[in-house]
Length: 177
Length: 143
Image (cartoon, rainbow over all chains, first blue to last red):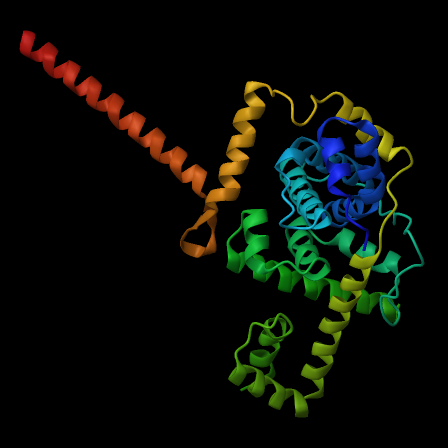
């Protein structure tokens, strides 16, 4: 977990100090980009949405209250910016490319590699992928997913269940191949 | 009851959405049904893989931070006087956060500020219709 910026850092960034804002961007860029990539499923869109999230952060800095940690606040901005981006722009067809991870590749389980999981997520229709990612990667409650994606609660649940079923079949087929 | 009844509940089970009795009923079935137990294991495995992937921090493309800073430099300083459009947009965002959302039938929700907006639009429309009706009445009287 990254340490939150100090109140003094935030105050300087709010006053337009570029170096203070640079510190925030450099500290959180991986987290914000990861959220955008997982929601949007390709690197070009993820970069645009992550930039948008940081711009929203910059503009809303005066509204930040320390009721939530800064990273939680920024994480929500990144999620909202990514979901809004998908709603606005749709999705560009792009070949699957797994971005570099910061540390070692995470251990995903027996016979499941990062590239297999990313490819399986990439092949899910957007309507299934976004709610499934929000639920199973980020653990959002169903109601919050329904609010974010502007879909009925029941529909969101069905989409997540179908998304999981598709992923399960895909990963099983990869393992058996 | 056949397996399809229990299979349909596995997702609700992993999401913690079943009641105590339903959990007990499902666990009873899982204890002697290897197919459903295997299905549950597969769902759990996918969820665990997804959660583990969520922990990975992905590296943005080179020069990402510089591009963000270049775009931010085009913006006015956050606390400074904002253009009228931005003031409206920020006020609506704050209203959104403060007022929350109204549940609609079917599980949908709509921001309270939208409901207020629809109300204002409906009131304006009603006032305009009333104004036209009165004008028409005055015209008829004068004939």
